[in-house]
Length: 108
Image (cartoon, rainbow, N blue to C red; front, side):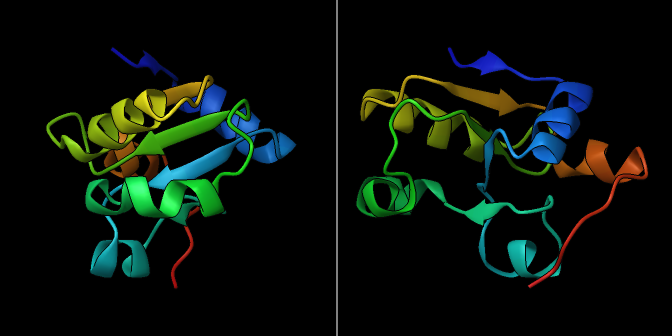
């Protein structure tokens, strides 16, 4: 099971530039709104895109999707761990929690 990160911890890590954030929703959801600086990586593309997108297997990585009911962030995090990434966490509450807290998002 992937370790979790809280909203406040994630916000601080993003502000410090200390984390790579991955949006596991992708497509129109990513285009409409995503966390600041987030990259798009959906479960189906993890194996093929991760090596180029995430060359440092020891870098801090956080996955998220819509809310706790969405399985995508866990699937991407689990797959990254299986591929040898060592510092992967999941923001379980997802973008719904981020937006409800009034934090900024970006759109494509």
